[in-house]
Image (cartoon, rainbow, N blue to C red):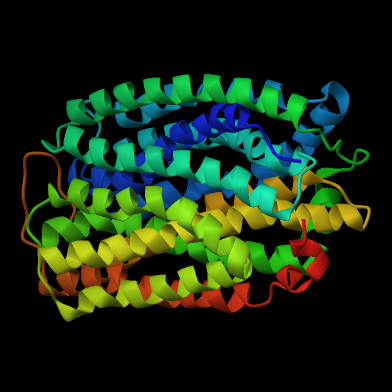
Length: 437
């Protein structure tokens, strides 16, 4: 069965808002804490890490609950509607009262970050489960995620370029206005997505979840799936790497190139080509399969992460970032489109729990988004990086400059190499029956 293009476009529009939420905190929150709110780097990293611990529990729970709702109502719309409130948390997180700095500011941001993560999970889990609900085959699942990744990349690109530009002055008010503007886009995107999910499940068939089980039982089934476990562990390190890159980029442009405005330029170079690369990777998938495409993307990211050690100028740096962006498009498309493949394989064995699988997957993704910035903040702390507040400048010690660069190059290369090692354990693409539909 082929999914109708109009339904896909409406569904994929929801990824624009998701891209905004993934990009803005991942790109700016660590920098906002250390450069505007005066939060020491280690505490700033903990502020981003600790709220994500909740996600490890919440996402699988919401996945099982989403399955139960789908069995009862025939859709997952209710939880999606709750997720629209994410826009409120986005504004609150960047609207820090003027009297708060240091630990107090970290507490404010962390509390709103917890609320935002919970609301994002309410939207993300049922949204990403939808392709697994559809009665479609191997290549059609890639097509569904190709549309989704295209719109996600547009959201990442728009937010990645606009957000740094809107907060270039570095003041608290700039961050608050940026959040208010982008949160409006998130709401519109989410509303369109709900329409798309309804149409997709109505026109493309709906694979009802299995009988109700506890959350722990669902997690157990998902974790015992050898191929899914390999994919999850690989994406844990992949997500850690890419979100470390996002968190480190503002530090890299300011302290290596001496121009924080280059952050927007580099984000454009990273995500602009990814818009085109997504459909190209989908064609590649039909020729060599998703597993090989993902392994190639991971290998390219390892090599590209080490390139800045050569100490080149702005133009070569932009070229390397473009290559990393092309690899990033493959990392996202192949990994996410392989989740429904794992669900389909489990369904063939009589264990259809799409929401549970997605809950474990999104919990892994959320963990990676937190660990990446925390690892980089830990590198900064080890190097003696000095935090500051808006309107003040400090001279960083040489050890901080070294840690800043190594954290942007060697650390992500090692993390992605580990992701590659786990990914090589995936076996489903070796089965002819898996790739024939």
